[in-house]
Image 1 (cartoon, rainbow, N blue to C red):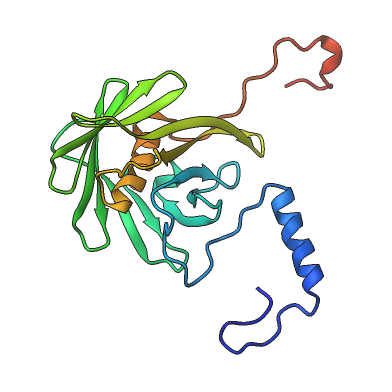
Image 2 (spheres, rainbow, N blue to C red):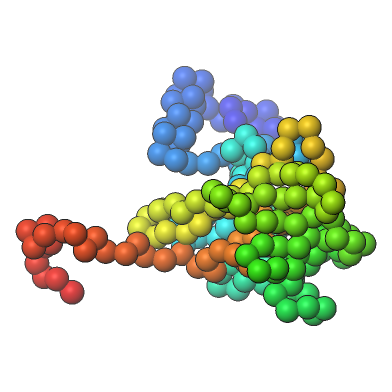
Amino acid sequence: MQSCPVCLAELRSDPEAAAEALGDILAVGGRLFRPEGIALFADGPSCTLLRLSGRGPLVFTGSTGLVEAGITGPGGRAAPPLTCRDHDGSLVFRLLACDAAEQALVAVGADGAALATYLSAGKGIDVRDETSAPVAHLLRVRGGYSLVETGGGRLADVGSTDAEVEGWVDDQWWLQPVPGRRVPLRLLGAVGLVLAAKVLLGRPWPDRPAPDRSAGPDDYQWPIS
């Protein structure tokens, strides 16, 4: 931003310096936050769940790469109860353990109503909508997962990749709808599926990468602990 949105005072006198600073942030893998006034997940449920720092909190980024919302939970772990909040601290949704079944989660909106339910099913997840009707299955496929409509075709691709940040490795999860197909869930119910996949199928907490056992004696520095 180059001027204050309230009093219009100039924040940066040099637009070129502002652009250079922005470029520096992006060049080192930094993330920008969704600007005020743009709706949450305005481009739909396409999103990625990741950590901005090695053991920092989880955040959602949208299709444009902007940080959409943050996740808070017990000790920063990917374990319920988890709360998704907007940048201003307002509640977006919560992901809670579901008492109706083992290894089941429910996403609850800010109004207290259920958005979707996610039940562990072998190596995948059964997905139900806000009325608890089965609408889709997250199935393990070669190279990731597919969200498949009950009695229908593929709705979205879901995947995870390991990423190392500040010496810690964690799995990043993402969802990308199939062009021309509508996911039969409310927007935040589809977004919540990515967080549910992280909880049910991924790591609860980042790990240190395994040491390289192929290194020779000269590759280590003294003292070796």
